[in-house]
Length: 251
Ligand SMILES: C[S@@+](CC[C@H](N)C(=O)[O-])C[C@H]1O[C@@H](n2cnc3c(N)ncnc32)[C@H](O)[C@@H]1O
Image 1 (cartoon, rainbow, N blue to C red):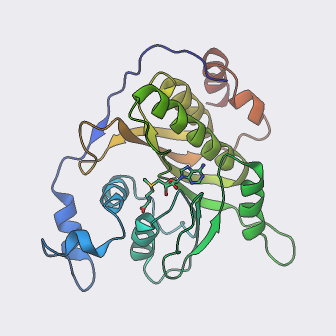
Image 2 (tube, helix red, strand yellow):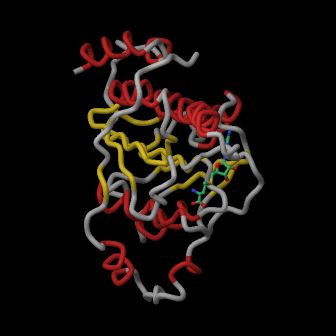
């Protein structure tokens, strides 16, 4: 269901200050001297989320229920736990591969492109009385095994992003936020248009810690809109022209 669009044009926000350094100084126990910095986190992916959070404040006081899509080996969950501190939270990591959850977090092995996995997530956040706890934040760092062919890597990533967007449509609370890794390419405008329907604010951000030659960047959606049944999931997944019309409708 991919629709050809014109080449991707964005003004991508870039991190300006050496804020990571400041962050490291702030963290309790400060194990981040030059040598230990990289060893502390389960992967270098942590540094990207730290930069994203510093700019967009994803781990704010209203953030309790988090789903971490493509969480393995777990550095993003680690950053979330660290930032949430002693606040109450539930973090559910999902990954297609087997992995060990970070302490205090939960994990389900599953493919996010499958409906079954979305049902498992809903089930996990369902209380004993049958009420469902909506999600406050969906973070996705999912990426396929890169083929090295940028266009195919882009298409593979778009499938993962669309699966994340479906989860956001169905299970993210009104006002909730989302961050997801995207791979630049021809379908990105369509994804951006869909995000603009679902979220009041949408940003493209390239963290300093993401290699400049990499096609990766991050889309951040802030404030999931209350679409009040005006928009169906099938509307959101129509082609670019129709999604742009939807944007006008929901404003
Ligand atoms: C770049 S890694 C994520 C790193 C992670 N954010 C961290 O901080 O450690 C991408 C992950 O996406 C996962 N992934 C790829 N396709 C997936 C799918 N269809 N469903 C769930 N996870 C998937 C991979 O198994 C891989 O662990």
